[in-house]
Image (cartoon, rainbow, N blue to C red; front, side, top):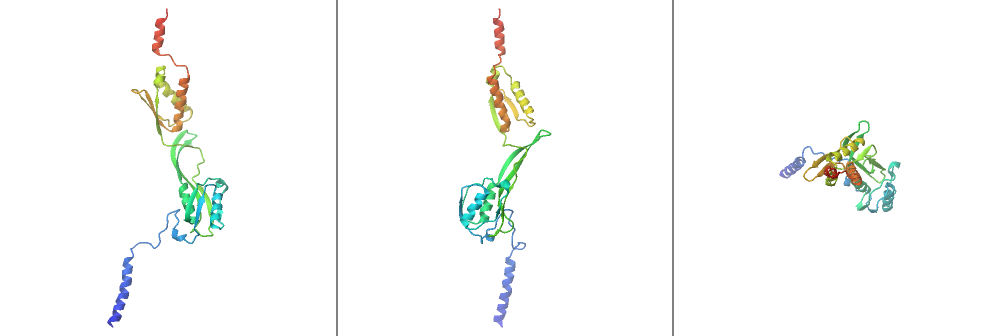
Length: 250
């Protein structure tokens, strides 16, 4: 009788411990984030080694079919047919793992300067572009992979990098008779004629006679052009030289 009682007790304690050993509120399965492929769900896929030297999406499909010895269901839009895919060297991977890695590598965030043609205003923005093969559901041997490109960079955008700071020595131009206002006014006029509303910041340092300019690289090119033209032109006479010439007159 005692023996049977001990067996009953041990049988009731076991599920009790198992129940309390499971954390409360923890789901049995956690959904993966977008774009992530669970390895355990793709273990059934064939694994292969691949040395891809780079090329178009169609070139990549051919290389995968060559190393796996199996056809790959792939759809490539005409607009993406000539897109360049970087080289890849991988070992013991599945098609799902390869395509996921290539999509992650393709991500590229670029800064833009958006121009409103009607108002002539500018606004900075960032756009993330990515491309690659993807499929619906859990990948398998019969999955249909379709190539997609997201974050198209077409449109009235000017690629704009971070602002830069440059220094321009104005001594030669000041000695030739030009004033600081002559240089800055010419620059502001040029930017205005180009329709640029957010012009670079300009500061003149009197002690060193240096013009300090902060702005986008493409907007600072006009400064080099202006100084080049001032150097090529006939230097203005200094006021002292004029006074000296007048004193020599009979």
